[in-house]
Image 1: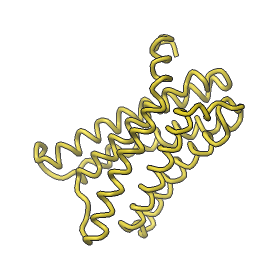
Image 2: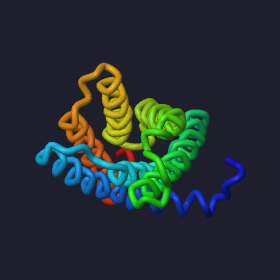
Image 3: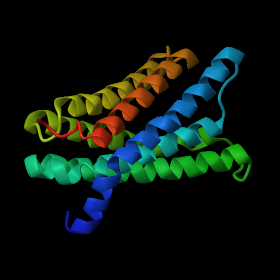
Image 4: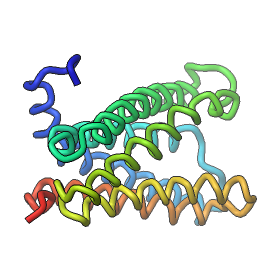
Amino acid sequence: MAFVNERHWESLENRRAAAFLLGGAIFAADVALVGSHVAAGTEPGAFGQALVGTAWTASFVGLLGTYPGLANGSRWLARASAVFAVVGGITMAVMALASLGYSTGILGGALSDVVMFFLPGVFLGIVFGFGSAGVATLRTGIYARSVGLLFVVLVLTFLFNIGSSIAGFGTLTTVLGVVVVLSLTKLALGYQFRTGNAPAA
């Protein structure tokens, strides 16, 4: 992508493992938060969404770090993944800041009043960003097959979360399960890239 030079891509590539590990660690903190609400029988507030937004923002940075490798095998899917990663990353960053504003009382009203405005960018970023990267990885083998499958797991978990909410069985316990899967998946991606197990043999 012409508007980002090679040095910037190299920097993102070097940081992808840390970005995924950070995203997974923040989701692990959210697991503890949601778990405490499940135990207490209370509903989580906007601060939990601030954690979610921050975790996904870090993960989108990690996804952008896969672009140089993916572009060697499937340029158009890599470009699609990068574009949607930017859309998702910006959306999640804004959502995280807004959620923090509502949780601290800096912003008036409730997060539920504006959350629908974030959904299109979130959907595009996760489904088409990670989805394109997953398809590109599985088709080309530029990264290990497990990396492609983990990308797909993120997409399917997100869609399950949305679908269960729409269908009316998205309980807080269900959300806890979703957050656990997201945390473990992102940590696994970070581990793969950190240890050098991500590149295909």
